[in-house]
Amino acid sequence: MKLRSRLTNLLGIALMLLLWQLAGQNLGDALLATPVEAARALVATLREPGFWAALWQMMWQMTIGYLLALGIGVPLGIAMGRVPVVDAIVKPWASMFIVVSAAAVVPLFIILMGRGLLFSTAIVFVVTVWYVVVSVTEAARAVSPKLIDVARSFAASDAQRFRHVILPALHPYVMIAARVGFVHALRAMVTAEMFISAGYGGLLNNAGLDLSTAPLFALIVMLMVISLSATTLLRWAADRAAPWYASRTRDR
Amino acid sequence: MTHLSVSNVCKSFGSVPVLVDQSLDVEEGEFVALLGPSGCGKSTLLQIINGLVPADRGTILLDGKDITGRTGAGRGMVFQGADLFPWRTALENVAFGLEVMGVGKAERLEQARHYLHLVGLRGFEEAWPHQLSGGMQQRVGIARAFCIRPSLLLMDEPFGALDVQTRDILQDELVRIWEAERKMVLFVTHGIEEALYLADRILVFSKRPAHVLREIVVPFERPRREEMKLDSTFLELRREISDLLRHDIHA
Ligand SMILES: Nc1ncnc2c1ncn2[C@@H]1O[C@H](COP(=O)(O)OP(=O)(O)OP(=O)(O)O)[C@@H](O)[C@H]1O
Ligand SMILES: [Mg+2]
Image 1 (tube, each protein chain N blue to C red):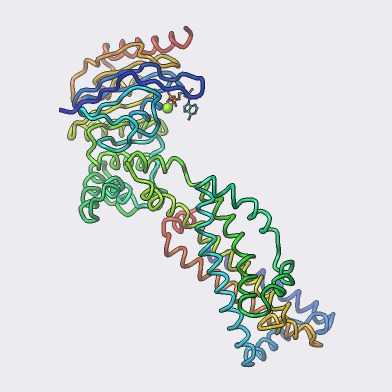
Image 2: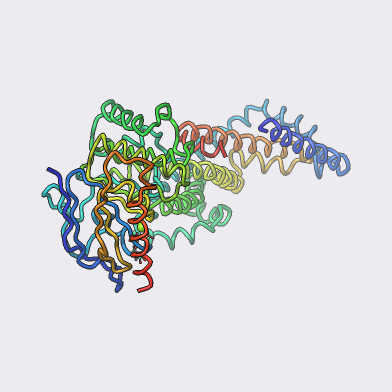
């Protein structure tokens, strides 16, 4: 069954590459480079030291903003889901800021913070944190009141109910928020860098000016690879940390 | 000498009185079944005794100690849907109460293993709840309540969600475990047969606000056997209780 779904996946990818190749051959590489050309450009890009420097800069700056967003967003989300007062205070801000995209706040943040590390981590943070807050809030609110009653009937204290019921119940949802949050963070980071033409975003800008679209595709493919590997890694970590959830979702 | 004494408990939800001056006593080692129409307040009464729901008035004494409005302290609860923690293995679920009490890991797991074996789940220590059938989950729920060695066991329709065969098996299991470790039991059920089969005494409640319509001392000897369900006294009592409940609903 698993093998079959893998095969179907591969077939889908092969079909898409074929269509892309055909379209590319018709349109020419100024409009749409073929996958073969993109692959060649990718190999060339990977050989450039500038590429690795840019990638490294993007990743570590993004990681700071991302970890901050998780470190603040998860506790805040739990507090909002479990304590009505906190929810009442933060909710309006959360629902306002969650619709703001990176592109909308970049100009303001440049004025406020310049173009350094502070700027890029701040962009990543504000775009990611509200997503984390809102999804963790929902999960925290949905923790089964029955299970909390079970713990209460065994005379579990507030702290014990938090530790033994709320935290484990939230665990899978926090991991999901971390996974989707990573994608948000990466996207925000690239947008920010494109505005200030630095790092990986700068490479993307330059590639956009190139006569061929192949180098641009190469960079985009690399972004996809990063995002996929990171989410796969996070999923693996989540399954290791919450085997009950992994087993329950796998068995189904 | 253990003893449960519930006196003059009142409870309303909003303006709806559910319990009015409810009193009952359970003696050491006594198995008491609570029967009554749906919505009359049986679960509410059990949860007040358990401490999960506050009473408006009245006191609950367990072994002479006032435990009104407090949870824990000598009571074990078996919930209708088992309500196991999905992130704990069967063994860890059984050990939960001891963990909350601060019992060390080796000690509590050993105790838990004992009770898990007692309910017939040897070999399922490491199973996740979702890998167990409904009946097996309920066995874990029973073991979880027994594991803290409560003097009072509270059971709210513990077999209500199970099929008839599984229910029959679990009734026998419960009786067997209970006879080995006699404690006070308050058992809420809709099954008249179940109540007659398990209990020493049956309290038949009226519709809301609940009061005791009739108290029936079950005359059968222990250990109870399947054949007693065909006994003429059994059938007569069953009819009587059934009439009582039907009559009350239309009254
Ligand atoms: N939290 C609550 N808020 C408001 N009303 C409630 C609440 N809990 C119970 N009630 C009401 O109290 C009454 C008694 O409920 P309870 O659950 O004790 O009945 P029950 O005898 O256990 O019924 P059943 O046999 O169907 O389980 C019902 O009318 C119910 O609507
Ligand atoms: Mg009930």
